[in-house]
Amino acid sequence: MVQRELSASTRARAGKPVRTCIGCRQKGLAADLLRVVARERESGGFVLTPDPKRRLPGRGAWLHRDPRCLSEAGRRRAFGRALRVSGSLDSSELDQWVDGAEISTSVTRTP
Ligand SMILES: [Zn+2]
Image 1 (tube, rainbow, N blue to C red):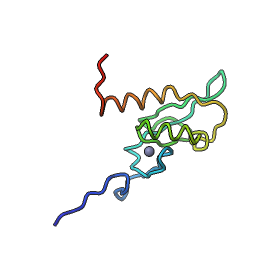
Image 2 (tube, protein in one colour):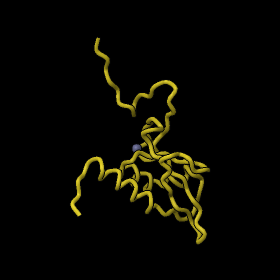
Image 3 (cartoon, rainbow, N blue to C red):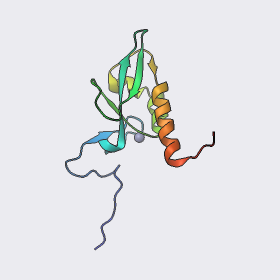
């Protein structure tokens, strides 16, 4: 008996929470996606804040740790819609987080 393996993005085990990536719109296990919340800045606007421990209050958006998903979400303004915020969104923290995750898994960069 051979069991075919399906990727986690197309099939989720029963009982595990599934979320939809706002970048590519694919579903995946919550554990595989990064939660992002919007933190209001005193100077106005919002800061997109990665929440890998999923402990920050408020609405969360879910995103693969993939720069392509991040740029796609940015291009479609998906963060504003998912997080119900309007105005400027500062994604620099999130950019760094996603870039760092990519570098550590697939690219070795010499300083
Ligand atoms: Zn994605």
